[in-house]
Length: 128
Image (cartoon, rainbow, N blue to C red; front, side, top):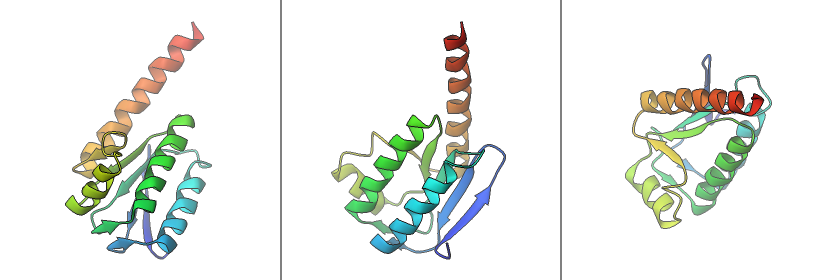
C-alpha cells in the first residue's frame, strides 16, 4: 500500500496514487485495495489521480470493471483530477462516458452524495 494514500471520510474513501504512472504492478495493488473497500461499511470510493500522468489500457479497463463492481454493490466509484493523457486513454477505449470522472475532488464528493440520495430514494420505492 506504499504506492497509495488512503483517506477515510464519513461517506467515502479517497485513494490517491503516489506514482505518476500506474503500472501493472501498482494496478494489481490498486485492484486489491479497491476490492477491500467494498468489504468496509463505507464502500464509496474516489480515485484522485492528481499525481498520475499516464495509465495503461489495462488500468483503464480495470477502472471500468471496478466501476461495474461498485455499481452492483450499490456503491459509488468516481475518478477525479484525471490528466489529459489519462482522459485520452479512456477516450480511445470508449470508457470516458461510462466512468464517473470529475475535474475536482469536491465535485467527486458531490457525485457520491447524489448517488447516495438516489440509492436511498430507489430503495424507498422498492419497499412500497
